[in-house]
Image (cartoon, rainbow, N blue to C red):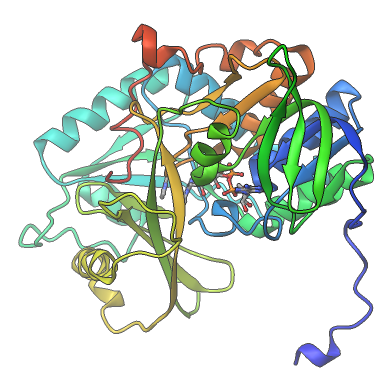
Length: 405
Ligand code: FAD
Ligand code: PYC
């Protein structure tokens, strides 16, 4: 069938790298590409290269389960994640690219008293921050998502659920492609198959550029946006990061007709599920327990997740799974990201999104572009510093991360 696919318009150029740029972004995932796009669009900086060791969108951006929500606990988080949700709303129009954002609602299941107390605390905190979130009884949860098993005899009984109606999903590849096309149209160079192997610093310690598999590329400013690979890249500049990198796995089923109207997450049993527009059930697990850079993971994690899915949604017990994969997520001690300047002049870092950065892509790129262009944080990312792990001003979102670590 693919033989008939001819005459596709080129979406972006693949230029030879220049000798030097004003800004080099390391990592052509959603966050790196969004950063370049907003640097060009909002700050007039267009002499930018976005470098990737592989193909653009081939990291966690192309591997995630696309859940979007902003129901985090703390004020700093509500500001950052809701900034992103607001940008998602108009993103297809802004990029002139259909990112298939669908606010179909994200429902988080409570299975015990502890879950119920935690979710209700989040609901109250969210509402105080103007973020929608509401408590549903088991019957209301089933009305919202009919395949859900709410029988009191269920192995994982549902005692209620927290619903964010503005939450939902978007098409992950389209997000990367949309930002790439829009950034390239404003003059940004996207250079794939170009791994960064070193960060060169001048005698006074400032950044001078990056060593790559395609030679040295000079840069006044370097933004590292490399998710699970942040630690080795920052080591190239002599910085030790408060990060651990773990595999996180997901899988999809054979496609079926529309059967699942929303997103459902259960942190307690390590499973979450939605249905893509192609009809596949998109299912994800908790992280593997060991650190690794292998982009694969243990089969027992997926088996456990599928057992949980079948307990909560018995209707799916005979579905066939088509494929599974893993990504490497960069986890901070407080499960919140780092979006900041670094002690090295001209070096900026956007990382630590762990299991939950897809939802933040537009907001993250937007405030990181501001940080690089102005050499100071936007007020929304002012708290997301590296120093907080020394001073203790943490933003502890372990519960809202909603994926078992
Ligand atoms: P990436 O997309 O990983 O981009 C980083 C890029 O850096 C990569 O393309 C990589 O090739 C490149 N790179 C690395 N090293 C180098 C180097 N030396 N030189 C040049 N380039 C380099 N988040 C949610 O909000 N909702 C979800 O439902 C969700 N589900 C997930 C499910 C799974 C299975 C996984 C793995 C993650 C999930 N996440 C989710 C997390 C989310 O995917 C990430 O937080 C987010 O996509 C990170 O985007 P990024 O652009 O920072 O990183
Ligand atoms: O952050 O919502 C999330 C998420 C869901 C699955 C993985 N991460």
